[in-house]
Amino acid sequence: MGSDNAIEAHDLRRTYKARTGWLKPKRTEVEAVRGVTFTVGRGELFGLLGPNGAGKTTTIKMLNTLLIPTSGTARVCGFDVEKETRDVRRRIGYVFGGDRGLYDRLSALDNLRYFAELYGVAPRDQKRRIAELLELVGLSGREGERVEGYSRGMRQRLHIARGLLHSPDVLFLDEPSIGVDPVAARELRRTVSDLASTGTTVLLTTHYMAEADELCDRIAVIADGQIQALGTPAELRHRADGRRVVEVEAYGVPESAVDALRGLPGVRETAVEARGALQLLTVHSDAHVDVQGDVLRELAGIRLGRVDSREPTLEDAYVAIVSAA
Amino acid sequence: MKTLRLMTVGGVIAYRALFNWTTPGMFVGTLLVGPLFQLLFFAYLGRQLQVADDRFYIVGNAVLTASLACVFGGTMAVANERRFGTLGHVLLSPRSRTAIFWGRVLPYAGNGLLIAVVTLSVGAALLGLRIPLDAVPGLFLAMAAGSLACGFFGLTLGALGLRFRDVWVVSNVSVALLLLLTGVNVPAGNLPGWMVTVGHYLPITHAAEAARRLAAGDGLAAAAPALGQELLVGAGYAVAAVVLLKIFEVESRRRASLDAL
View 1 (cartoon, rainbow over the protein chains, first blue to last red):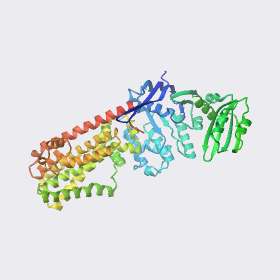
View 2 (view 1 turned 30 degrees about the vertical axis):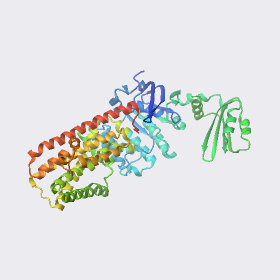
View 3 (view 1 turned 180 degrees about the vertical axis):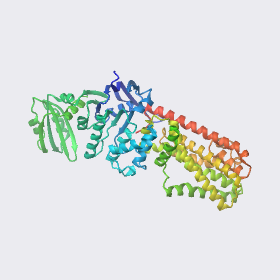
View 4 (view 1 turned 45 degrees about the horizontal axis):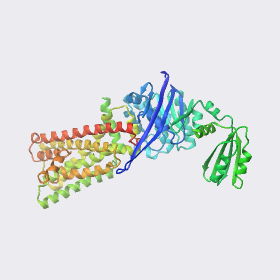
Protein backbone atom coordinates (compact mmCIF):
# COMPACT_ATOMS: atom_id res chain seq x y z
CA MET A 1 0.00 0.00 0.00
CA GLY A 2 1.46 3.35 -0.99
CA SER A 3 1.56 6.64 0.86
CA ASP A 4 -0.86 8.18 -1.63
CA ASN A 5 -3.66 6.48 0.22
CA ALA A 6 -5.54 8.29 2.94
CA ILE A 7 -7.28 5.11 4.05
CA GLU A 8 -5.97 1.57 3.84
CA ALA A 9 -8.12 -1.29 5.12
CA HIS A 10 -6.83 -4.83 4.88
CA ASP A 11 -8.98 -7.87 5.62
CA LEU A 12 -10.94 -6.04 8.33
CA ARG A 13 -13.21 -8.24 10.39
CA ARG A 14 -15.47 -7.43 13.28
CA THR A 15 -17.50 -9.86 15.33
CA TYR A 16 -20.02 -8.72 17.92
CA LYS A 17 -20.49 -10.99 20.89
CA ALA A 18 -23.53 -10.64 23.09
CA ARG A 19 -24.67 -12.42 26.24
CA THR A 20 -28.24 -12.43 27.47
CA GLY A 21 -29.65 -13.87 30.67
CA TRP A 22 -27.97 -14.47 34.02
CA LEU A 23 -28.92 -17.93 35.20
CA LYS A 24 -28.62 -19.59 31.82
CA PRO A 25 -26.57 -17.11 29.82
CA LYS A 26 -27.00 -17.36 26.07
CA ARG A 27 -24.10 -16.22 23.96
CA THR A 28 -24.52 -15.05 20.40
CA GLU A 29 -21.97 -13.97 17.82
CA VAL A 30 -22.63 -11.82 14.79
CA GLU A 31 -20.00 -11.31 12.13
CA ALA A 32 -20.81 -7.76 11.03
CA VAL A 33 -17.75 -7.28 8.81
CA ARG A 34 -16.08 -10.25 7.16
CA GLY A 35 -12.79 -9.42 5.52
CA VAL A 36 -13.10 -5.97 4.00
CA THR A 37 -10.15 -4.69 1.98
CA PHE A 38 -9.98 -1.38 0.14
CA THR A 39 -7.96 1.79 -0.20
CA VAL A 40 -9.02 5.39 -0.58
CA GLY A 41 -6.65 7.83 -2.26
CA ARG A 42 -5.92 11.26 -0.85
CA GLY A 43 -8.54 13.73 -1.99
CA GLU A 44 -10.81 10.95 -3.25
CA LEU A 45 -14.54 10.84 -2.57
CA PHE A 46 -15.19 7.19 -1.89
CA GLY A 47 -18.61 5.67 -1.39
CA LEU A 48 -19.46 2.67 0.75
CA LEU A 49 -22.83 1.57 -0.45
CA GLY A 50 -25.01 -1.14 0.98
CA PRO A 51 -28.33 -2.08 2.52
CA ASN A 52 -29.12 -1.72 6.22
CA GLY A 53 -27.03 -4.09 8.32
CA ALA A 54 -24.47 -4.59 5.56
CA GLY A 55 -21.54 -3.53 7.76
CA LYS A 56 -21.05 0.06 6.58
CA THR A 57 -21.20 1.74 9.98
CA THR A 58 -19.13 -0.97 11.66
CA THR A 59 -16.46 -0.47 8.99
CA ILE A 60 -16.46 3.28 9.57
CA LYS A 61 -16.29 2.83 13.34
CA MET A 62 -13.22 0.65 12.96
CA LEU A 63 -11.59 3.22 10.71
CA ASN A 64 -12.36 6.14 13.02
CA THR A 65 -11.03 4.29 16.10
CA LEU A 66 -14.35 3.80 17.93
CA LEU A 67 -14.09 0.04 17.47
CA ILE A 68 -11.09 -2.28 17.44
CA PRO A 69 -11.12 -4.75 14.52
CA THR A 70 -11.47 -8.38 15.58
CA SER A 71 -8.78 -9.04 12.99
CA GLY A 72 -7.18 -7.29 10.05
CA THR A 73 -5.48 -3.91 9.95
CA ALA A 74 -6.35 -0.39 8.89
CA ARG A 75 -4.39 2.81 8.58
CA VAL A 76 -5.70 6.34 8.21
CA CYS A 77 -3.21 8.93 6.97
CA GLY A 78 -0.54 6.32 7.63
CA PHE A 79 -1.49 5.74 11.29
CA ASP A 80 -2.72 2.46 12.70
CA VAL A 81 -6.33 2.80 13.83
CA GLU A 82 -5.88 0.37 16.70
CA LYS A 83 -2.62 1.60 18.22
CA GLU A 84 -2.12 5.20 17.07
CA THR A 85 -5.58 6.43 17.94
CA ARG A 86 -4.61 9.95 18.95
CA ASP A 87 -2.78 10.55 15.66
CA VAL A 88 -5.74 9.21 13.71
CA ARG A 89 -8.26 11.29 15.67
CA ARG A 90 -6.33 14.49 15.02
CA ARG A 91 -6.74 13.93 11.30
CA ILE A 92 -10.32 12.76 10.94
CA GLY A 93 -13.80 14.18 11.16
CA TYR A 94 -16.92 12.09 11.66
CA VAL A 95 -20.44 13.02 10.65
CA PHE A 96 -23.41 10.74 10.97
CA GLY A 97 -27.04 11.05 10.03
CA GLY A 98 -29.94 11.48 12.40
CA ASP A 99 -31.28 13.87 15.00
CA ARG A 100 -28.89 13.00 17.80
CA GLY A 101 -25.25 13.84 18.42
CA LEU A 102 -25.61 17.51 19.34
CA TYR A 103 -26.20 19.28 22.64
CA ASP A 104 -29.83 20.37 22.24
CA ARG A 105 -29.76 22.94 25.04
CA LEU A 106 -26.87 24.82 23.50
CA SER A 107 -26.84 27.08 20.49
CA ALA A 108 -25.09 25.98 17.32
CA LEU A 109 -22.32 28.43 18.16
CA ASP A 110 -21.76 26.92 21.61
CA ASN A 111 -21.87 23.40 20.19
CA LEU A 112 -19.11 24.38 17.78
CA ARG A 113 -17.16 26.21 20.48
CA TYR A 114 -17.22 23.14 22.70
CA PHE A 115 -16.15 20.72 20.01
CA ALA A 116 -13.47 23.18 18.88
CA GLU A 117 -12.01 22.78 22.38
CA LEU A 118 -12.36 19.01 22.27
CA TYR A 119 -10.78 18.73 18.84
CA GLY A 120 -7.88 21.01 19.72
CA VAL A 121 -8.60 24.00 17.49
CA ALA A 122 -6.22 26.77 18.60
CA PRO A 123 -8.12 29.41 20.63
CA ARG A 124 -6.95 32.23 18.34
CA ASP A 125 -8.38 30.39 15.30
CA GLN A 126 -11.69 29.30 16.77
CA LYS A 127 -13.77 32.40 16.07
CA ARG A 128 -12.67 32.66 12.44
CA ARG A 129 -12.98 28.93 11.80
CA ILE A 130 -16.46 28.70 13.30
CA ALA A 131 -17.64 31.71 11.27
CA GLU A 132 -16.24 30.13 8.08
CA LEU A 133 -18.01 26.86 8.73
CA LEU A 134 -21.32 28.46 9.63
CA GLU A 135 -21.10 30.28 6.32
CA LEU A 136 -20.15 27.07 4.49
CA VAL A 137 -23.13 25.12 5.79
CA GLY A 138 -25.54 28.02 5.50
CA LEU A 139 -26.23 28.54 9.20
CA SER A 140 -24.90 32.09 9.49
CA GLY A 141 -27.47 34.21 11.25
CA ARG A 142 -29.01 31.20 12.99
CA GLU A 143 -25.99 30.26 15.10
CA GLY A 144 -27.36 31.85 18.28
CA GLU A 145 -30.49 29.68 18.33
CA ARG A 146 -30.77 26.59 20.48
CA VAL A 147 -30.24 23.41 18.51
CA GLU A 148 -33.44 21.89 19.94
CA GLY A 149 -35.37 24.19 17.59
CA TYR A 150 -33.43 23.17 14.49
CA SER A 151 -34.91 21.15 11.63
CA ARG A 152 -33.23 17.88 10.72
CA GLY A 153 -31.60 19.48 7.70
CA MET A 154 -30.13 22.24 9.86
CA ARG A 155 -28.87 19.67 12.34
CA GLN A 156 -27.21 17.74 9.55
CA ARG A 157 -25.47 20.85 8.35
CA LEU A 158 -24.32 21.56 11.89
CA HIS A 159 -23.02 17.98 12.12
CA ILE A 160 -20.93 18.65 9.01
CA ALA A 161 -19.63 21.94 10.42
CA ARG A 162 -18.64 20.13 13.62
CA GLY A 163 -16.87 17.41 11.64
CA LEU A 164 -14.82 20.01 9.80
CA LEU A 165 -13.83 22.19 12.78
CA HIS A 166 -10.24 20.98 12.95
CA SER A 167 -9.82 20.87 9.15
CA PRO A 168 -9.51 17.08 9.03
CA ASP A 169 -7.62 15.38 6.23
CA VAL A 170 -10.23 12.62 6.12
CA LEU A 171 -13.96 13.05 6.66
CA PHE A 172 -16.21 10.08 7.41
CA LEU A 173 -19.82 10.74 6.44
CA ASP A 174 -22.10 8.02 7.72
CA GLU A 175 -25.46 8.29 5.95
CA PRO A 176 -25.52 12.08 6.26
CA SER A 177 -28.69 12.54 4.23
CA ILE A 178 -30.83 9.98 6.03
CA GLY A 179 -34.28 11.40 6.76
CA VAL A 180 -33.45 14.75 5.19
CA ASP A 181 -35.90 16.34 2.75
CA PRO A 182 -34.89 16.44 -0.94
CA VAL A 183 -33.96 20.12 -0.97
CA ALA A 184 -31.80 19.80 2.14
CA ALA A 185 -30.28 16.59 0.76
CA ARG A 186 -29.32 18.40 -2.43
CA GLU A 187 -27.65 21.16 -0.39
CA LEU A 188 -25.80 18.54 1.61
CA ARG A 189 -24.55 16.90 -1.56
CA ARG A 190 -23.33 20.25 -2.82
CA THR A 191 -21.46 20.85 0.45
CA VAL A 192 -19.86 17.40 0.28
CA SER A 193 -18.88 17.92 -3.33
CA ASP A 194 -17.30 21.28 -2.45
CA LEU A 195 -15.34 19.61 0.33
CA ALA A 196 -13.89 17.01 -1.96
CA SER A 197 -12.86 19.71 -4.40
CA THR A 198 -10.76 21.34 -1.65
CA GLY A 199 -8.69 18.16 -1.24
CA THR A 200 -10.42 16.60 1.76
CA THR A 201 -10.67 12.84 1.51
CA VAL A 202 -14.26 11.79 2.03
CA LEU A 203 -15.57 8.33 2.85
CA LEU A 204 -19.32 8.40 2.42
CA THR A 205 -21.68 5.64 3.41
CA THR A 206 -25.16 5.73 2.03
CA HIS A 207 -27.89 3.52 0.73
CA TYR A 208 -29.06 6.15 -1.72
CA MET A 209 -27.73 5.10 -5.09
CA ALA A 210 -28.26 8.48 -6.74
CA GLU A 211 -26.28 10.17 -4.02
CA ALA A 212 -23.34 7.83 -4.47
CA ASP A 213 -23.57 8.10 -8.25
CA GLU A 214 -23.56 11.89 -8.19
CA LEU A 215 -20.78 12.33 -5.65
CA CYS A 216 -18.36 9.44 -5.59
CA ASP A 217 -15.18 8.88 -7.59
CA ARG A 218 -15.34 5.19 -6.68
CA ILE A 219 -17.90 3.05 -4.93
CA ALA A 220 -17.59 -0.16 -2.93
CA VAL A 221 -20.82 -2.11 -2.63
CA ILE A 222 -20.91 -3.92 0.70
CA ALA A 223 -23.43 -6.58 1.63
CA ASP A 224 -23.40 -9.29 4.24
CA GLY A 225 -20.19 -7.86 5.71
CA GLN A 226 -18.18 -8.23 2.50
CA ILE A 227 -17.33 -6.02 -0.43
CA GLN A 228 -19.26 -7.39 -3.39
CA ALA A 229 -18.08 -4.94 -6.01
CA LEU A 230 -15.72 -2.00 -6.25
CA GLY A 231 -15.21 0.49 -9.05
CA THR A 232 -16.23 3.78 -10.57
CA PRO A 233 -19.96 4.36 -10.99
CA ALA A 234 -19.55 3.67 -14.72
CA GLU A 235 -17.76 0.39 -14.03
CA LEU A 236 -20.42 -0.72 -11.61
CA ARG A 237 -23.14 0.16 -14.08
CA HIS A 238 -21.64 -2.45 -16.41
CA ARG A 239 -22.55 -5.07 -13.81
CA ALA A 240 -26.08 -4.76 -15.10
CA ASP A 241 -25.07 -5.17 -18.74
CA GLY A 242 -26.99 -7.88 -20.49
CA ARG A 243 -30.10 -7.14 -18.49
CA ARG A 244 -33.41 -5.48 -19.12
CA VAL A 245 -35.71 -4.07 -16.45
CA VAL A 246 -39.50 -4.08 -16.35
CA GLU A 247 -41.13 -1.82 -13.78
CA VAL A 248 -44.79 -2.22 -12.89
CA GLU A 249 -46.85 -0.10 -10.51
CA ALA A 250 -49.48 -2.28 -8.88
CA TYR A 251 -51.89 -2.41 -5.96
CA GLY A 252 -52.36 -5.44 -3.69
CA VAL A 253 -49.89 -7.87 -5.25
CA PRO A 254 -49.91 -11.15 -3.27
CA GLU A 255 -46.62 -12.87 -2.40
CA SER A 256 -47.65 -15.84 -4.56
CA ALA A 257 -47.75 -13.60 -7.64
CA VAL A 258 -44.27 -12.29 -6.87
CA ASP A 259 -43.02 -15.87 -6.51
CA ALA A 260 -44.60 -16.69 -9.85
CA LEU A 261 -42.73 -13.77 -11.45
CA ARG A 262 -39.47 -15.10 -10.03
CA GLY A 263 -40.10 -18.42 -11.75
CA LEU A 264 -40.61 -16.94 -15.22
CA PRO A 265 -38.06 -17.97 -17.86
CA GLY A 266 -35.32 -15.34 -18.26
CA VAL A 267 -36.09 -13.54 -15.00
CA ARG A 268 -33.00 -12.97 -12.83
CA GLU A 269 -34.35 -10.93 -9.90
CA THR A 270 -37.63 -9.51 -8.74
CA ALA A 271 -37.98 -6.81 -6.10
CA VAL A 272 -41.04 -5.23 -4.52
CA GLU A 273 -40.94 -1.75 -3.02
CA ALA A 274 -43.96 -0.49 -1.07
CA ARG A 275 -44.82 3.15 -1.65
CA GLY A 276 -47.89 3.71 0.48
CA ALA A 277 -50.75 1.77 -1.09
CA LEU A 278 -48.72 1.37 -4.27
CA GLN A 279 -46.22 -1.42 -4.89
CA LEU A 280 -43.42 -0.98 -7.37
CA LEU A 281 -42.40 -4.29 -8.92
CA THR A 282 -38.96 -4.35 -10.52
CA VAL A 283 -38.21 -7.38 -12.65
CA HIS A 284 -34.67 -7.92 -13.98
CA SER A 285 -34.37 -10.25 -16.92
CA ASP A 286 -31.85 -11.31 -19.54
CA ALA A 287 -31.67 -8.58 -22.16
CA HIS A 288 -32.56 -10.91 -25.02
CA VAL A 289 -35.73 -12.19 -23.32
CA ASP A 290 -38.84 -10.00 -23.43
CA VAL A 291 -40.63 -10.87 -20.22
CA GLN A 292 -43.10 -7.96 -20.14
CA GLY A 293 -45.95 -9.97 -21.62
CA ASP A 294 -45.38 -12.85 -19.20
CA VAL A 295 -45.20 -10.46 -16.26
CA LEU A 296 -48.52 -8.83 -17.15
CA ARG A 297 -50.11 -12.24 -17.64
CA GLU A 298 -49.04 -13.31 -14.13
CA LEU A 299 -50.50 -10.08 -12.73
CA ALA A 300 -53.85 -10.50 -14.47
CA GLY A 301 -56.73 -9.43 -12.23
CA ILE A 302 -54.53 -7.12 -10.16
CA ARG A 303 -55.02 -3.36 -10.45
CA LEU A 304 -52.03 -1.94 -12.30
CA GLY A 305 -50.63 1.55 -12.90
CA ARG A 306 -47.64 2.50 -15.01
CA VAL A 307 -45.74 -0.25 -16.84
CA ASP A 308 -42.27 0.50 -18.13
CA SER A 309 -39.51 -1.44 -19.83
CA ARG A 310 -36.08 0.19 -19.77
CA GLU A 311 -32.28 -0.11 -19.80
CA PRO A 312 -30.73 -0.83 -16.40
CA THR A 313 -29.44 2.07 -14.26
CA LEU A 314 -26.73 2.15 -11.61
CA GLU A 315 -29.41 1.41 -9.05
CA ASP A 316 -30.32 -1.72 -10.96
CA ALA A 317 -26.66 -2.71 -10.97
CA TYR A 318 -26.60 -2.19 -7.21
CA VAL A 319 -29.69 -4.36 -6.77
CA ALA A 320 -28.09 -7.03 -8.93
CA ILE A 321 -24.88 -6.97 -6.89
CA VAL A 322 -26.64 -7.01 -3.52
CA SER A 323 -29.08 -9.72 -4.64
CA ALA A 324 -26.21 -11.92 -5.69
CA ALA A 325 -24.51 -11.57 -2.28
CA MET B 1 -2.35 26.57 29.10
CA LYS B 2 -4.42 24.76 26.48
CA THR B 3 -5.26 22.06 29.01
CA LEU B 4 -6.33 24.67 31.54
CA ARG B 5 -8.56 26.25 28.90
CA LEU B 6 -10.08 22.86 28.05
CA MET B 7 -10.84 22.32 31.73
CA THR B 8 -12.33 25.75 32.38
CA VAL B 9 -13.98 26.93 29.15
CA GLY B 10 -14.84 23.38 28.11
CA GLY B 11 -16.08 22.55 31.60
CA VAL B 12 -18.44 25.51 31.71
CA ILE B 13 -19.91 24.83 28.25
CA ALA B 14 -20.34 21.15 29.15
CA TYR B 15 -22.10 22.20 32.37
CA ARG B 16 -24.61 24.26 30.38
CA ALA B 17 -25.06 21.41 27.92
CA LEU B 18 -25.48 18.54 30.34
CA PHE B 19 -26.80 19.78 33.69
CA ASN B 20 -30.57 19.33 33.95
CA TRP B 21 -31.24 21.95 36.60
CA THR B 22 -29.86 25.13 35.06
CA THR B 23 -33.17 26.96 34.64
CA PRO B 24 -33.82 29.45 37.48
CA GLY B 25 -36.94 27.61 38.68
CA MET B 26 -35.23 24.23 38.81
CA PHE B 27 -32.06 25.63 40.32
CA VAL B 28 -33.76 27.56 43.12
CA GLY B 29 -36.38 24.94 43.83
CA THR B 30 -34.25 21.82 43.66
CA LEU B 31 -30.91 23.06 44.87
CA LEU B 32 -31.67 25.93 47.26
CA VAL B 33 -35.17 25.70 48.71
CA GLY B 34 -35.41 21.91 49.05
CA PRO B 35 -32.12 21.47 50.95
CA LEU B 36 -32.96 24.45 53.20
CA PHE B 37 -36.17 22.73 54.31
CA GLN B 38 -34.17 19.55 54.87
CA LEU B 39 -31.84 21.52 57.14
CA LEU B 40 -34.78 22.96 59.08
CA PHE B 41 -36.37 19.52 59.38
CA PHE B 42 -33.29 17.94 60.94
CA ALA B 43 -32.59 20.97 63.15
CA TYR B 44 -36.10 20.89 64.65
CA LEU B 45 -35.98 17.10 64.93
CA GLY B 46 -32.66 17.43 66.74
CA ARG B 47 -34.16 19.98 69.13
CA GLN B 48 -37.07 17.63 69.80
CA LEU B 49 -34.90 14.58 70.41
CA GLN B 50 -32.11 16.56 72.11
CA VAL B 51 -29.45 14.56 70.29
CA ALA B 52 -27.30 17.54 69.39
CA ASP B 53 -27.46 21.33 69.27
CA ASP B 54 -28.49 23.55 66.34
CA ARG B 55 -24.88 24.14 65.26
CA PHE B 56 -24.42 20.40 64.69
CA TYR B 57 -27.36 20.24 62.28
CA ILE B 58 -26.99 23.63 60.58
CA VAL B 59 -23.30 23.29 59.77
CA GLY B 60 -23.49 19.60 58.88
CA ASN B 61 -26.51 19.97 56.63
CA ALA B 62 -25.10 23.08 54.97
CA VAL B 63 -22.00 21.13 53.96
CA LEU B 64 -24.18 18.21 52.85
CA THR B 65 -26.37 20.39 50.58
CA ALA B 66 -23.52 20.52 48.09
CA SER B 67 -23.96 16.80 47.51
CA LEU B 68 -27.19 17.10 45.52
CA ALA B 69 -25.70 19.36 42.85
CA CYS B 70 -22.34 17.62 42.88
CA VAL B 71 -23.38 13.96 42.93
CA PHE B 72 -26.13 14.33 40.35
CA GLY B 73 -24.14 16.91 38.39
CA GLY B 74 -21.08 14.68 38.23
CA THR B 75 -23.28 11.82 37.09
CA MET B 76 -24.99 13.97 34.46
CA ALA B 77 -21.56 15.13 33.22
CA VAL B 78 -21.00 11.67 31.78
CA ALA B 79 -24.30 9.83 31.72
CA ASN B 80 -26.20 12.56 29.83
CA GLU B 81 -23.84 12.10 26.89
CA ARG B 82 -25.84 8.95 26.19
CA ARG B 83 -29.05 10.95 26.20
CA PHE B 84 -27.82 13.37 23.56
CA GLY B 85 -25.92 10.76 21.55
CA THR B 86 -22.74 12.82 21.84
CA LEU B 87 -20.53 10.31 23.62
CA GLY B 88 -18.92 9.07 20.41
CA HIS B 89 -17.91 12.58 19.42
CA VAL B 90 -16.38 13.17 22.84
CA LEU B 91 -14.51 9.87 22.64
CA LEU B 92 -13.18 10.86 19.21
CA SER B 93 -11.43 13.84 20.75
CA PRO B 94 -7.65 13.57 20.67
CA ARG B 95 -7.45 15.59 23.93
CA SER B 96 -6.74 14.21 27.39
CA ARG B 97 -9.73 12.43 28.92
CA THR B 98 -8.53 13.48 32.37
CA ALA B 99 -8.63 17.16 31.44
CA ILE B 100 -12.01 16.85 29.72
CA PHE B 101 -13.76 15.10 32.59
CA TRP B 102 -12.02 16.71 35.56
CA GLY B 103 -12.83 20.05 33.96
CA ARG B 104 -16.48 19.07 33.93
CA VAL B 105 -16.44 18.63 37.71
CA LEU B 106 -15.30 22.18 38.42
CA PRO B 107 -18.59 24.00 37.64
CA TYR B 108 -20.51 21.45 39.71
CA ALA B 109 -18.13 21.91 42.63
CA GLY B 110 -18.61 25.69 42.32
CA ASN B 111 -22.33 25.12 42.21
CA GLY B 112 -22.19 22.98 45.35
CA LEU B 113 -20.10 25.57 47.15
CA LEU B 114 -22.58 28.33 46.30
CA ILE B 115 -25.48 26.21 47.56
CA ALA B 116 -23.64 25.32 50.78
CA VAL B 117 -22.79 28.96 51.45
CA VAL B 118 -26.38 30.10 50.83
CA THR B 119 -27.82 27.28 52.95
CA LEU B 120 -25.45 27.99 55.85
CA SER B 121 -26.13 31.72 55.73
CA VAL B 122 -29.92 31.40 55.53
CA GLY B 123 -30.06 28.47 57.98
CA ALA B 124 -27.93 30.34 60.53
CA ALA B 125 -30.02 33.50 60.11
CA LEU B 126 -33.33 31.63 60.51
CA LEU B 127 -32.25 29.59 63.54
CA GLY B 128 -30.14 32.28 65.20
CA LEU B 129 -26.74 30.57 64.99
CA ARG B 130 -23.77 32.92 65.44
CA ILE B 131 -20.67 31.98 63.48
CA PRO B 132 -17.36 33.57 64.51
CA LEU B 133 -16.19 35.94 61.77
CA ASP B 134 -12.66 34.56 61.81
CA ALA B 135 -14.10 31.07 61.07
CA VAL B 136 -15.59 32.18 57.75
CA PRO B 137 -12.51 31.64 55.51
CA GLY B 138 -11.97 28.19 57.02
CA LEU B 139 -15.64 27.30 56.62
CA PHE B 140 -15.42 28.39 53.00
CA LEU B 141 -12.44 26.08 52.53
CA ALA B 142 -14.21 23.16 54.21
CA MET B 143 -17.30 23.58 52.05
CA ALA B 144 -15.14 23.93 48.92
CA ALA B 145 -13.27 20.74 49.80
CA GLY B 146 -16.54 18.90 50.43
CA SER B 147 -18.03 20.14 47.15
CA LEU B 148 -14.97 19.17 45.14
CA ALA B 149 -14.81 15.71 46.72
CA CYS B 150 -18.52 15.26 46.06
CA GLY B 151 -18.11 16.33 42.44
CA PHE B 152 -15.44 13.68 41.86
CA PHE B 153 -17.61 11.15 43.67
CA GLY B 154 -20.42 12.02 41.23
CA LEU B 155 -18.02 11.73 38.29
CA THR B 156 -17.11 8.23 39.48
CA LEU B 157 -20.80 7.33 39.45
CA GLY B 158 -21.12 8.94 36.02
CA ALA B 159 -18.25 6.77 34.78
CA LEU B 160 -20.22 3.74 35.96
CA GLY B 161 -22.99 5.08 33.77
CA LEU B 162 -20.85 4.23 30.75
CA ARG B 163 -21.20 0.57 31.70
CA PHE B 164 -24.56 0.43 33.46
CA ARG B 165 -27.54 2.19 31.98
CA ASP B 166 -29.43 2.61 35.26
CA VAL B 167 -26.78 4.66 37.00
CA TRP B 168 -29.40 7.13 38.28
CA VAL B 169 -30.51 4.47 40.74
CA VAL B 170 -26.97 4.41 42.09
CA SER B 171 -26.92 8.21 42.35
CA ASN B 172 -30.22 8.27 44.23
CA VAL B 173 -29.04 5.62 46.66
CA SER B 174 -25.71 7.40 47.08
CA VAL B 175 -27.35 10.67 48.07
CA ALA B 176 -29.42 8.80 50.67
CA LEU B 177 -26.29 7.06 51.94
CA LEU B 178 -24.49 10.37 52.31
CA LEU B 179 -27.37 11.57 54.46
CA LEU B 180 -26.97 8.55 56.72
CA LEU B 181 -23.28 7.68 56.74
CA THR B 182 -21.48 11.03 56.77
CA GLY B 183 -22.45 11.79 60.37
CA VAL B 184 -24.21 14.95 59.29
CA ASN B 185 -27.51 14.13 60.95
CA VAL B 186 -26.65 11.17 63.17
CA PRO B 187 -23.52 11.64 65.29
CA ALA B 188 -20.87 9.12 64.27
CA GLY B 189 -20.75 7.80 67.83
CA ASN B 190 -24.35 6.61 67.50
CA LEU B 191 -23.74 4.70 64.25
CA PRO B 192 -22.62 1.06 64.00
CA GLY B 193 -18.88 0.67 63.45
CA TRP B 194 -19.14 -0.51 59.85
CA MET B 195 -21.21 2.51 58.92
CA VAL B 196 -18.62 4.80 60.44
CA THR B 197 -15.92 3.00 58.46
CA VAL B 198 -17.84 3.36 55.19
CA GLY B 199 -18.49 7.01 56.03
CA HIS B 200 -14.76 7.65 56.30
CA TYR B 201 -14.42 6.84 52.60
CA LEU B 202 -17.32 9.03 51.52
CA PRO B 203 -17.14 12.72 50.66
CA ILE B 204 -18.69 15.25 53.11
CA THR B 205 -17.85 13.24 56.28
CA HIS B 206 -14.54 14.95 56.96
CA ALA B 207 -15.61 18.31 55.52
CA ALA B 208 -18.58 18.39 57.91
CA GLU B 209 -16.31 17.53 60.81
CA ALA B 210 -13.87 20.29 59.85
CA ALA B 211 -16.70 22.80 59.40
CA ARG B 212 -18.13 21.99 62.83
CA ARG B 213 -14.75 22.52 64.49
CA LEU B 214 -14.38 25.84 62.70
CA ALA B 215 -17.90 26.99 63.57
CA ALA B 216 -17.18 26.09 67.21
CA GLY B 217 -14.23 28.47 67.11
CA ASP B 218 -11.53 25.77 67.33
CA GLY B 219 -9.51 27.40 64.54
CA LEU B 220 -8.07 26.20 61.25
CA ALA B 221 -5.28 24.22 62.88
CA ALA B 222 -7.80 21.99 64.66
CA ALA B 223 -9.81 21.53 61.46
CA ALA B 224 -6.82 20.94 59.18
CA PRO B 225 -6.52 17.14 59.62
CA ALA B 226 -10.18 16.60 58.72
CA LEU B 227 -9.84 19.04 55.83
CA GLY B 228 -6.81 17.11 54.56
CA GLN B 229 -8.73 13.82 54.82
CA GLU B 230 -11.60 15.27 52.80
CA LEU B 231 -9.19 16.36 50.09
CA LEU B 232 -7.64 12.89 50.10
CA VAL B 233 -11.05 11.27 49.69
CA GLY B 234 -11.77 13.67 46.81
CA ALA B 235 -8.43 12.88 45.16
CA GLY B 236 -9.19 9.17 45.49
CA TYR B 237 -12.48 9.56 43.66
CA ALA B 238 -10.86 11.80 41.03
CA VAL B 239 -8.37 9.04 40.24
CA ALA B 240 -11.06 6.34 40.42
CA ALA B 241 -13.24 8.25 37.94
CA VAL B 242 -10.44 8.63 35.41
CA VAL B 243 -9.40 4.98 35.75
CA LEU B 244 -13.00 3.80 35.27
CA LEU B 245 -13.51 6.10 32.28
CA LYS B 246 -10.33 4.72 30.71
CA ILE B 247 -11.31 1.11 31.39
CA PHE B 248 -14.81 1.54 29.97
CA GLU B 249 -13.53 3.40 26.93
CA VAL B 250 -11.05 0.63 26.12
CA GLU B 251 -13.74 -1.96 26.79
CA SER B 252 -16.15 -0.13 24.49
CA ARG B 253 -13.66 -0.26 21.64
CA ARG B 254 -12.96 -3.94 22.20
CA ARG B 255 -16.45 -5.20 22.98
CA ALA B 256 -18.67 -2.49 21.48
CA SER B 257 -20.19 -2.22 24.94
CA LEU B 258 -21.15 1.44 24.58
CA ASP B 259 -24.02 2.63 22.49
CA ALA B 260 -21.61 5.38 21.63
CA LEU B 261 -23.45 7.15 18.85
